[in-house]
Image (cartoon, rainbow, N blue to C red; front, side):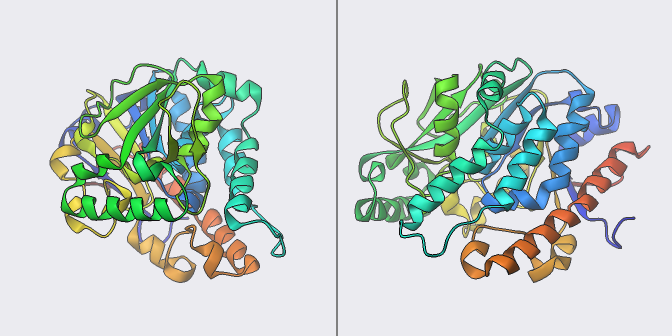
Length: 356
């Protein structure tokens, strides 16, 4: 049974709505997926991701490009695994189950680094890594941010560099590239996105680079150590890809097919420093071929605390309280999966679709 208000927000660009009207929800219409940064927010999509990865996208064998930053790249690695449903379930359950000794004498950064390794190791076996790198159907593109100058350091210097990056970004988003370079680790040529807005380097993703690239893509400065150097990539310190591509700038979309975007909300922000800048949302003119799926605002308002999980829950809630909240949010996400299944089965493909 659905909730009183439909729990899923579906936004689609003008060309996407035309294709949905003409072809329905055939998965082969989507030749790319995007995955945003968001940490614990992945738990809000628990059952929607399981349905998408384990069912919907398996109804076709067409090639799909996966563009992700931070937790988006981790989710996509699960999709490119030999058993996507098992992999995404392991990722979700390990992220949920993170625990640590409050008397641990190590620094918080060391503890978080170890926990993130443990989360990834839940599904990244050598066999899975080999499959992801050689997957001819799901082509992986992991977005990272390589620090330039003092942004390739840690501690006080990094703080100064991040402050300067935030100020420059406030004046002009293009100034962000004075402090960071976008480095994309890819298993094949990328056609759906052509990154022309920033200095961007593309590196072949091989088995040795996969885990370091995933760790780097999710390494929030100050919270984690980042990755110092990745073999075969430009020298420097690698940080969270969301610094540049928090939700992605869709002016860079160049594909002729549609983009499927399972997201955490109905706003698409460009970079991490743009979160509070209302004018840095993606314009509808650049989202013509995008279909976004997200928990509705009404659905979110009904969750405990009126929000979805996020990384601040670690510090704001006691462990038992956090786990209860997260479990509730994960369980409730069944409504999102059921809603999407109903949408793709509806005789009217546009019945629940709104324009950007």
